Length: 341
Image 1: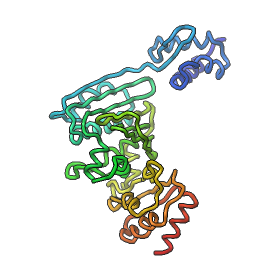
Image 2: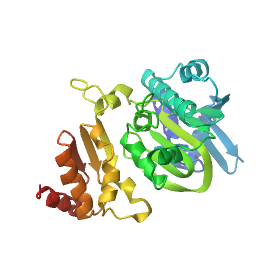
Image 3: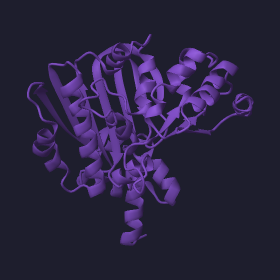
Image 4: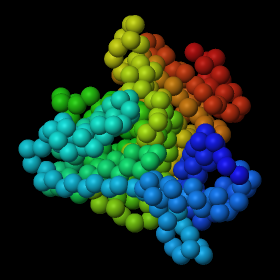
């Protein structure tokens, strides 16, 4: 059977989009999906291999396929570096054919994360990697310095580095307020499809403009490594994300934030005390609107709730607290303390 160009393109597109998740079963999956024979699928796979879009590993009897990935690596001595120069000289020429919105997001994330290494890491070196396949662009920025979570822990006098992740999630935190706004990680974690910071035994992961989550590493990874990934056909706009957390008609500054309250439940800790609440609301007065996302939080204590929804709101009437994803128990506790105002 002879297929039209449109049908052939549809089959190839299917294989390109499914090869990463099905490297060993791509042939049978494509046969089943389109009800076509193995020789036909092999023909189109070979064409994709010839076009250097996918590559074949393993034997003919047990083939393993994956997208062809081109990788570039740079290492710099961290002295007198300027992130915009590094971007324009080394990375931007490699992304000149990328969609303008995606290229702008890559530039923003690259320059923000590289600047963090230059100004905050206390590292002697900076390592950058750019990896690109047919569908995705990946950026990795690494250093061998003090570690971002440890740096924040020390700056704020926190008990544990895990508490530093909550400060990053809020936005507007910086250990150098005279020279930095503290917005870079907040927005970078939201404009990329996936974003991950690894440092020592902790990881913070963000998935697009969604709440991040925390988990522990088995190994102690020195310094800080940031991974950023975005699809080449992403429709995300840097301006749209900025505007979501600002009001361009009234206040163009970063005035709104969204806090995943679940980040406070590290090691299964219940949210019961005023001290916990005070850690959560620290810095809220820098915003005019704070969205508290209670996804993953099934209940909270009276003291915790009272400190946030009565004490804080009475002291800061200009800060509008919004709650989302509250369970029935959480909602009832919030209403209970609000009724006591």
